[in-house]
Image (cartoon, rainbow, N blue to C red; front, side):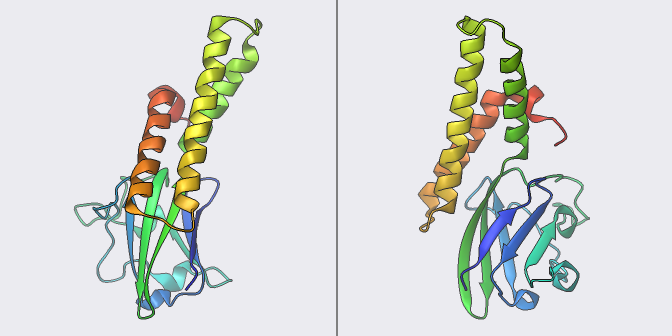
Length: 181
């Protein structure tokens, strides 16, 4: 099948490309988890693929394609932020894909970089601390992206990526991760 999964830069759309028969596909999405399907879907028309196919034939999913645990249209989710494991099942077989949504963390990095640029004293403890945080957060994200985008995605790599993402988010704090990006 050779499918790929990407999240748009605004983290509002997940695109699965590669030409699977999406009308008959069963797609499970695991969000910061590897064992529990994190985003429920409607059972009668899970993704309405006729409306969500791009001109290239790729499946484009937005948050409006999902339902909450009560079975209503989801208002719970606003962005695809985090580590995603996607399992696509068709008559051709099963394929696992990974994707990383980083809008919240990128927003955090932008806020911290802005703070760093305001620093007047390059050798000050405060400026060094901000730079250290930026470097750690960036490296955690790069590690998560590398693990998820690897040619062999294992449960252990997904779990490691989830830990890296959540650690980066923790380092950002709630204030810096809630930028409405």
